[in-house]
Image (tube, rainbow, N blue to C red; front, top):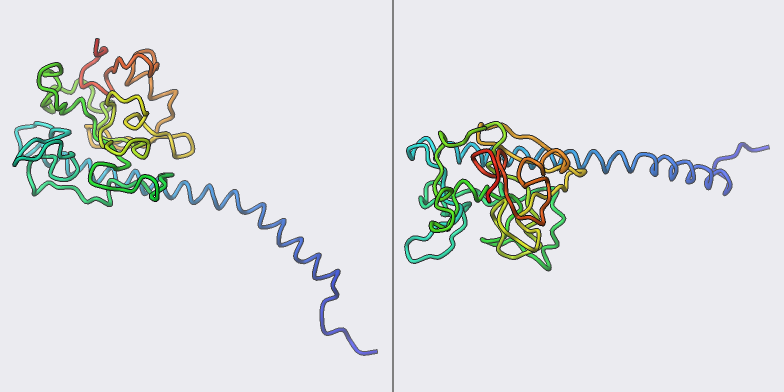
Length: 229
């Protein structure tokens, strides 16, 4: 009797079934690993942005940059381009894009006024009348540097002109985006970066953690303790 030289159909099906079972067991782990890698890359981007913003404060009498600039005949130039008011501090566009973003670029493409990482508007608010206190904030005025956010993930794809964090917005585009396994990446004015859950972060930037109040609070959104109103 000649030895068999090939699998039977049943044996082949058994092997395929085993491979399918193993793949189904590994897939969730691979997806989690991919998500963790995206979160780490995003936090790295924010740390690099934070470093550039910190360099700006050192060069300009401890002032944080404006979140939106009006100069050279341009209105509403975002902070990450020449929004700092100085061309030498224009940001690398790739750093403002989050690898973990769920943005559908066919519907909401990236452009100069739509990014994934926002700058805390309360450190350089463009409204010099109503919010003069927060128009140009200095490093010294930040009461809790380790808790005051400088940058953070935002849902910018909900609205085509979102590039600031903690701004009045009914489309949720400028609110923190908890897209990294229900965590949001932030960088802070003391230079460190951290991923935070909404239950932990929200009470630090909005009164009672209730977004419907639009009563932004310190120490995370505002540079001082207390609430806006």
